[in-house]
Length: 163
Length: 175
Image (cartoon, rainbow over all chains, first blue to last red):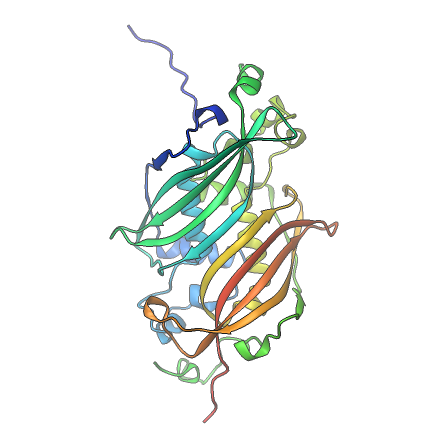
């Protein structure tokens, strides 16, 4: 029997369990053009990210990918599992860039849940604390960070959002 | 390793010569010269470019439907994009001669940013230290500079604060 399906995406606060691990889907290959475009678009003045001759003079085989793009891609890959139902992203801690990323590399993203606590001031939300790791196609960790996310509680929001 | 002066046949210098490791003094405050207004569509494009699927950045109808949750019904700019632009605004004075970004910590989004807002950046040099490492980040002689980077909006409100460590080249010895 055909049916009308209306899937929703993203986890509410109640959907997280301490100790949970997430192997985020998709993965994403970064190309040379977009890496250079991201760097110049965000006004990054370091020619390391857009001048191949300069990058080679510093011992790189190609322009490394601006680490802010790598971080944003690893972050973006984690959103459907972690923060698609977020109200706000609060901040970043212990972000480390461990390996250069080059055009053609494919990034993957994994996270673990470090802590959960309800908001003290607003009962309709809670704070989800995660550690996310970005790896490349060889399984090497290229970056990692922790972040805290303000996530909706299902009880307070699901009814409000029903169309 | 070829010297910087040999890169270009004309002997052109590709980076400024006032932002080497030696040029930073702990306590220095740098007010970065440029501002950047974030456009309505570009922040959504950048959000989708990096596969961020959180709809509060790109679904106006959803925000209209629940203004209590979503900043009064306004689409907030994804923080990773705010961070990238604030780093960009600070780059010519702080990271143009960096050979690597090492780390960031204590990063907080203090106030939301919306399309039409103009971002500005300020950096404070927190500390400097020798670089002991090598491996994938080995390069010319360099040292670690730690900055506190602050992003502000057009009203001077702090929207972002983050500490960052960069590996910055030492001033080349002229021969």
